Length: 484
Ligand SMILES: O=c1ccn([C@@H]2O[C@H](COP(=O)(O)OP(=O)(O)O[C@H]3O[C@H](CO)[C@@H](O)[C@H](O)[C@H]3O)[C@@H](O)[C@H]2O)c(=O)[nH]1
Image 1 (cartoon, rainbow, N blue to C red):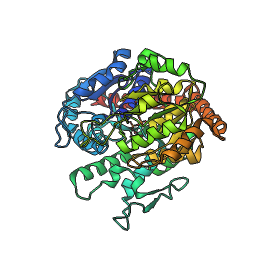
Image 2 (image 1 turned 60 degrees about the vertical axis):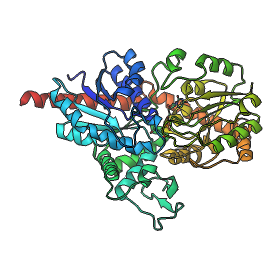
Image 3 (image 1 turned 180 degrees about the horizontal axis):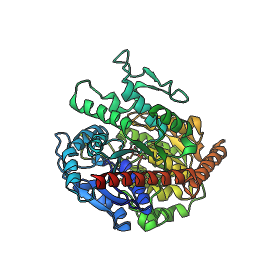
Image 4 (image 1 turned 90 degrees about the vertical axis):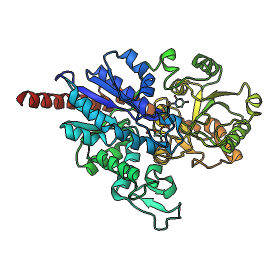
């Protein structure tokens, strides 16, 4: 550790939608002179390869994955678990507390701060014990996190425990958002008073609120009012928005083609196919790294894509080990042949960032995961929203109601869309009456986002201010250490 190169422990949560942005942010920290140790369990080590090959100075801390009765042996990342795997993974990783403390105590020059994912709130207590700071890295936006913080602090309950549609209001948050119960965070909805893992998760959220500061993958112009709200709510201004954090070398096709996974169709083939399409004519369809459509949903989506007549790329995950039945992830057998030439099907994983940046893409049918949202915005691509869970309903509202860069297509993880309606929306998204206006607004937000991360922009300045803060902390700790 030194004043110029503060040493920081980075601890990402093992899910693609969480690791990718924190690893991209880690790359930026290294570029700004921060020395990094990054904590993973063995099976997640290969995900670090692109980061480590670009930044050989980064050190790893590999700790054994603790066992858990509901996580199959050999699984260490929630991408291999169904959606409800998030809770068990959060609880399980809490068992790394003692090994982390031991590692710190035996390290000759230990980190002077911890930056960890918002799902790893227990690291706040570790930092407190060690006399250092813990910073939350929020992979969600500021609106979504404001709602989640409010929930865990206030613990509102339904008046009628069987009413899934009961509305929950958040009058203290700007624009007074409200959501029916079923759209609230599933982690919150599954809280059971007195249950050890529920109580652990609640403590983690309260520890997030108590942590020294938050780094957001968002940008000021997108969420200004919610960032201001959080600062008031937390009672301090240690809130930095540094996004959108982009993957390093984002234009390098070979480097990006395997970002987070490997694609069933080569990136170069996908781009060559897009090259033959007219500008803004293709709808890209993808629901992130976790969601797997039910067979019924997939069938209606396939019918809709067929009926719509639009060109498209469909990126569709198959069922994982954790799915108990065969009712997930199957594409109807007639589909591929019927749409040949007009649609491209990519199984399991697609090079999303590269696809979205192609000028042939005209719209993105998305579940509104926060990374997909930002990747679409930075590419200037308007969206069709189909939020399914987590923070996605709040994200969809932000895109549709506040920034008017998206139209609603469907809602809910189990909802089966009507194929006629969806076909019309798909066509409207690339050929409809208001498409130019939406595209204009999306391209304006794109400009703002890009200017924000350039020298002098708001996100650029927040990154510099955060690194300065890390340096000051490191100096204080060093001085204390020398003084003892
Ligand atoms: O075929 C694919 C699928 C995904 N991705 C990438 O994987 C990430 C997916 O992240 P996101 O869009 O945020 O979706 P999820 O994987 O569902 O992310 C989880 O984590 C996010 C961050 O907290 C939340 O906003 C989401 O609601 C939550 O489901 C993005 O970078 C995508 O580019 C690909 O590159 N190819």
